[in-house]
Amino acid sequence: MRNTERYHVTGANSLWHVYKTVPFWKVIKNFIVIQLARYTPFLSLKNWLYRTFLRMKVGDQTAFALMVMLDVMFPERISVGKNTVIGYNTTILAHEYLIKEYRLGNVLIGDEVMIGANSIILPGVTIGDRAVIAAGTVVHKDVASGTFVGGNPMRMIYSKEEMKKRIGQDDFLKDHA
Image (cartoon, rainbow, N blue to C red; front, side, top):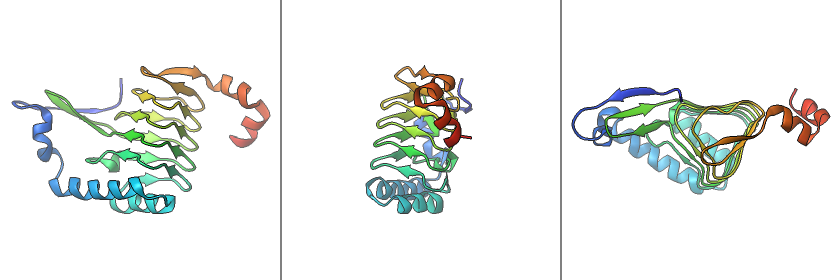
């Protein structure tokens, strides 16, 4: 189970209640900032936009590839560690609007994480340091540090121990002490 807060609604589905949950002008501002950042090739500018206007925590030397789509309503609930790569066209969500409820959850992405292109990160998940997410993965639960996961549904491809063997124990320990 993901770590999300659940809010029940009555009457129309929860998306009809959207501006009771988040201010309209906040969504407009976030949308403009995210769209600008999606198309800029300047990594330092993207990180500055995210930190300054979206109140996200973004570590040094983290790289968001072109077309990354961040949560428009609650980007401040996304935290990305240092020296992490977020692949092309990845979507990171901190909310989900359902029929009878909406859910909010922090997304915590560690240091030196590699997220492959076209992945989807759902609300309320934690991705540990040095984890690798294969392209096209739907991350619907926490990912342990140092593991390699992929697919839909997501499954473990290599454990931390198997990753150490694949890249060389000495190199792994030297680079990830």
